[in-house]
Amino acid sequence: MLTAEARPRLAPGVRIQRDEARDAWLVQAPERLVYPDEVAMSVLALCNGERTVHAVIEDAAREYGETPDTVGDDVRALLSELEQYGVLVDAGR
Image 1 (tube, helix red, strand yellow):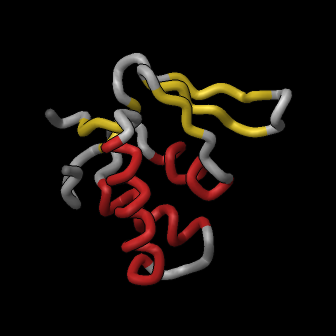
Image 2: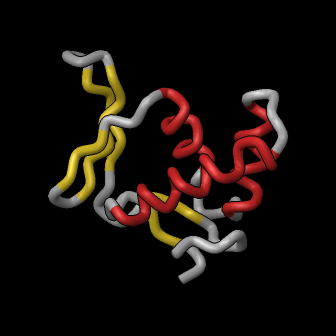
């Protein structure tokens, strides 16, 4: 589970590429394909292994002109789902 102080990053073996045929981003994880929407991609881009979950929430809120309280639950849910899919891991572990 990614805590507020976890530093999410792409899991080993995960690649992000553009699927030109579908005009969409594609996240390839072992035995899984994920087509994230534009908002999910912007949050994924913040997950560099240096920012904490708390910082990802703050940066996402700033990017969308919202408060961290407004977007926090949604960002945490997205990060949790991506962790369950094997897309994200905690860089601090």
